[in-house]
Length: 141
Image 1 (tube, rainbow, N blue to C red):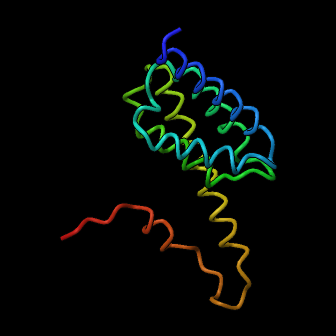
Image 2 (cartoon, one colour):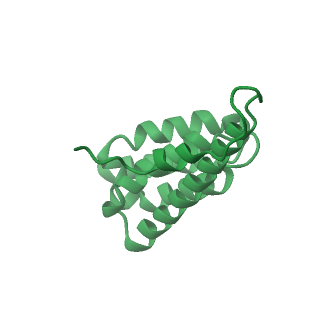
């Protein structure tokens, strides 16, 4: 086994370990943060790591929105990987896109709910017109 093979093996072993930790709310934050740091390096998206990385991201897509996990962090992690989807196989790239969409929608809903739960008395209850317009990209003149 040459040094490159050994490096690939060690990295894939580490990704398997991270995958286990991602399934546990107590370890999710540290595991997801380590993975996010690792995905900051373009070498993370090399083909020999794809299967293990996708294993981790599959777990993130399933658990991030559950109680005790971190939806924001999960979404950031998936978004970083989706931004590099051109380095993945088409099947993985499609999965990444759909997971990002799904978690993005959940984040938006959660944000809207927390806005509704603000203490009353600030403003009379009006339909939040500005929240929709602020979601659209603004055109600079």
